[in-house]
Image 1 (cartoon, rainbow, N blue to C red):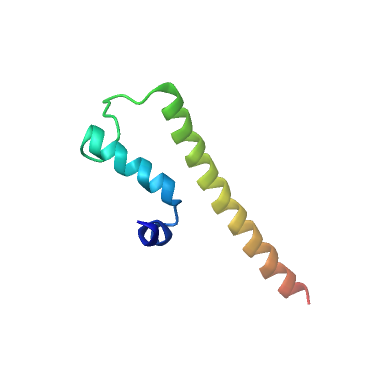
Image 2 (cartoon, rainbow, N blue to C red):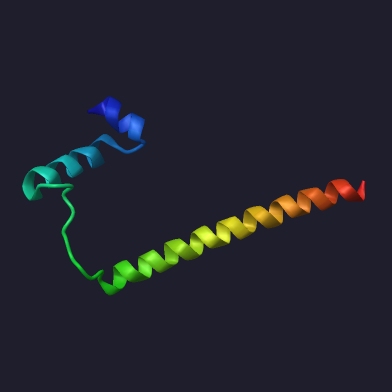
Length: 72
């Protein structure tokens, strides 16, 4: 279990929690719902915003590096 946790980059206790959830609930251990809760929807939007902002940040960082080399 410890080796798998290291390979996945999660703590061993978290892996045990997931295993317990699968045993108790079956499948992947996640509750099924056809409609996300408002907090789940908000989290989804925030994660998408974070991803977009990280991409924009990377583009600006690369552009700044490019123009810095051009100014020399």
